[in-house]
Picture 1 (cartoon, rainbow, N blue to C red):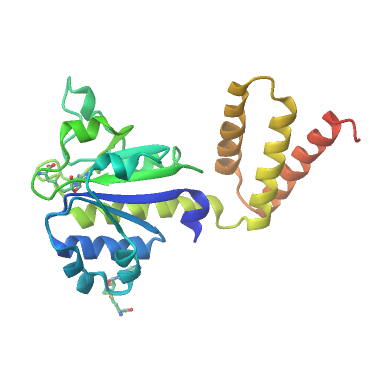
Picture 2: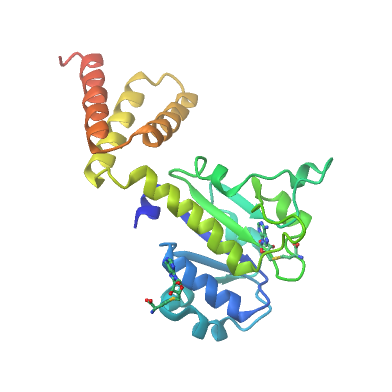
Length: 233
Ligand code: SAH
Ligand code: SAH
């Protein structure tokens, strides 16, 4: 539940070759509250993944099989490719971010995490369609993780961060924070570019708030600013 307050996550598997991996990934999605699983042009029998999905079976049943990566990513705000091969000097496409670095970028976004084929990973063309390339640091002698293990590590890291950021803040406080940030920004907005203030402010405030008390104080503060600007107090 917490993860879905934080961001909408879609796990995308490109041409998975092993049904066990598809099943394990569906289970991981369920473990970490990810509802969207897209499978691009699978080369294995996805239905055989069921026995490995266990109680993640509903995620597998509701997964979408599409023919191209484009279909899986068109409606997303942020697309994050993943690879075991990263940071080769001179190769701009393979400059990577680490799992703990993406957590601060995904707040309130629709985010796709794109994982490649067990045999050859993602193509350069597929990576170039994404905004970021994520690499999980490992023993450099053997950096290639099993596909489902890579999914598990990334989802764990995102979920860990979501718990730390919003565990002690009620849904009502989150709603009120959003409401007053929205209202203050709408009041001072002069041109469409000012819309970015809303996202920036919300992200910054949510990242910094430690508990419900903090949240209530900031809500009061924003509410007072809003009322003052509008001449009500
Ligand atoms: N039905 C069993 C399942 C055990 S899973 C049970 O509920 O105990 C097998 C092992 O994986 C567990 O014994 C534990 O070592 C590890 N494991 C599974 N999920 C875990 C979690 N969320 N946190 C820590 N260890 C976990
Ligand atoms: N020989 C292929 C192996 C792909 S492993 C290659 O090196 O590209 C299958 C998928 O697991 C990868 O496409 C990637 O999505 C993920 N993966 C494996 N190891 C990873 C790592 N260290 N960091 C990030 N993703 C990894």
